[in-house]
Length: 224
Image 1 (cartoon, helix red, strand yellow):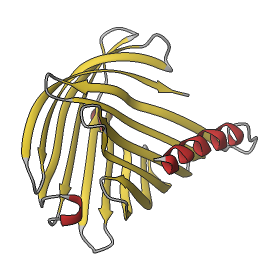
Image 2 (cartoon, rainbow, N blue to C red):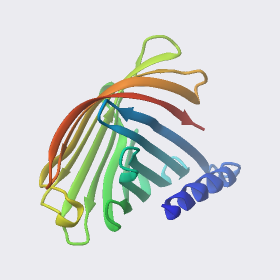
Image 3 (cartoon, one colour):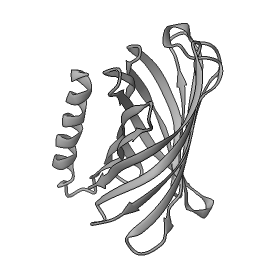
């Protein structure tokens, strides 16, 4: 995981440098989820962070998602994506690049995806991952924000992961491999910093097991 930490520090440093450029190059970092998620049988720490550098038409993105099991002292999933993003329509970007998985297997995937804002202000982040053996995986994340007050926000969230074929080395079964449906209630102390609580219902399917659970969530959302 030292390589992953190095990528994070590089992204943060580069972002601060180019953000001061006078030719319209900007930088934005967002930790969408830094959270603890668990119940009586499960204790996970999760992250979902993104950082981009560029302008309205062209951006370089770094994305990372993962989770760490405090019970087993292992990373269940951890990956980093490096993407080139091109604006193709109002509020929509086409993205292409590569993903490096650090856990559970150290693998490389090609990435093709779209990210943007759908009608009714639904945030969409979708990606297709093409493995070294030609298998295709997919990830779709949907988010929405409901303003209860100027600072109190209810945010439903949905994420779906799928695979076209079984992947023995990753323990992945063809079909829906993971589905998350959740709700988070956050309070924006500042626009850039907001702690939250919530619930997640998770279905997971692998070659070894299938399980589902309801989990409590507490975390923080931050950006600059």
